[in-house]
Amino acid sequence: MTISEPAARHPALGKVDAEANRQLTTLDGWRKFIENPLTPPVVLSRDALRRLTPTERDLYDDGRLDHHARMLVVATSFVEKTVTCGRRLVLLNRHAISARRGLIVSGLPGTGKTIAITQLGRAHELLDRARHPNVPDRIPVLYITVPPAATARMVAAEFARFLGLPIRSRLNMTDIIEAVVGVCTDTRTGLVLVDEIHNISQVTRSGAEVSDTLKYFSERIPATFVYAGIGVENSELLAGTRGAQIAGRFTLMPTRPFPYGAEWKALVATLEDTLLLHDHPPGSLVRLDRYLHNRTDGMIGALSHAVRGAAIDAILSGTERVTKESIDAIPLDHAAETTASPLKKTARR
Image 1 (cartoon, one colour):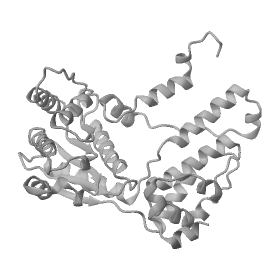
Image 2 (cartoon, helix red, strand yellow):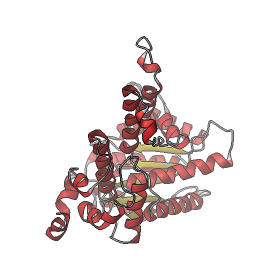
Image 3 (tube, one colour):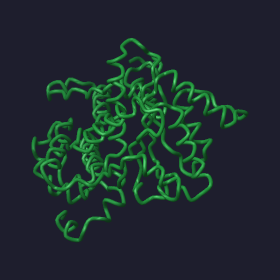
Image 4 (cartoon, helix red, strand yellow):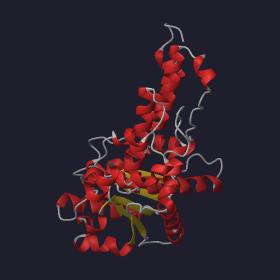
């Protein structure tokens, strides 16, 4: 690359720009998520490393850093169960005229709720594309997140934003809803994913209006609705008459921390296989599986954060390996740091 070459034209920087636009809450970002599985960079031999210029080495390391910065999607038993249950509901709702059944994925932060529902969406969209090849105007899946302190208009606007519909101040709620319903119906939307559903409270006026808006969308759009949130079964979303109606139509699938066992060990092994480090002894992370369970309290989000963080530090520091000490140096979320029992905290030392 010469000094006069525009930075935006450099392939490494272009890749960063492309990654910045992978927001799942827009149609373009969702399609990038579906269409472009990211390929990890190749780990170079020591001889090839020595032949790199300083700039080339920086770009090579940056590619590895970017790889470890991404959240790994692992086909855990919970993800597979969510995909199976979701696809079953889509089939059962296929010919339903009203009162379609839905799914609620609920659990603690870091237990894989968003991964599970987005993998359900991915499976649904890929199947839809296989059944309708060369039909680019279909939108099989719609994904939104509920904003904090959301109003009905804000949620309706999230639907419109995903679809790329303009939201002008002069448009009223009816205009937005009719535009969304029209596009979803015309493009055969069959699955609607609503994340952060715990931000809705039935005991407030605005929360009740949001709930009513989602219910109206579910009645007008011939699709299966899937909600995901923190502790939904004990939240105000299921309070009162509106909450009872949701509880009567939605299947609840709770997420939990992983117990220490075969699946946890396999999960650690899968994470270790993704490491792109030059001096990491194979199997050394697997031998720490019980320590990692104690360290993260069985939370997949905390495990991924700890391992990826230690891998990033290994590249930045030049050690090129993940160790117990480097993982211990990674601060986890407050919940993972405070929920461990005194016995577990002792085991970490």
